[in-house]
Image (cartoon, rainbow, N blue to C red):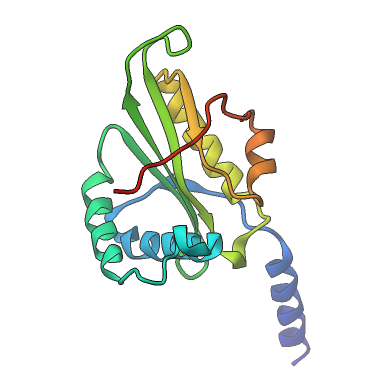
Length: 175
């Protein structure tokens, strides 16, 4: 009986220790969890732009199909950290070929998207570990610049990793 109480205390103590971020490439078996995390990202960002009330759930099926297609694409890298019941965090990077210029010596532009950590796993370094993995991948592929859109909560992390304000205004067109 006494041993059981000690085990419970040790188990409770172990749950307070942050998990080590073990970053790995996403695989097809992760697609359902990647869709869940992306939906969570849109809910967190809120507002009609990111989470329109008029949207149907069909985008999830479209996302799953694109993820399955892009998991092994040479110009995309999707990294994940596992949690106890599913994925704890994920992030994706893409590389596009633009026209070279004075600041874009080879015209290769990286873009980080879909960085999200499940609320149960935040403040454990998972996002930083995924970002570091993506930045290493961008360096290996000699990108000239990496762009991302940051939430207010994540902006300090990105700045600590060396991101600065973009010199151009960001605009979009919605057909």
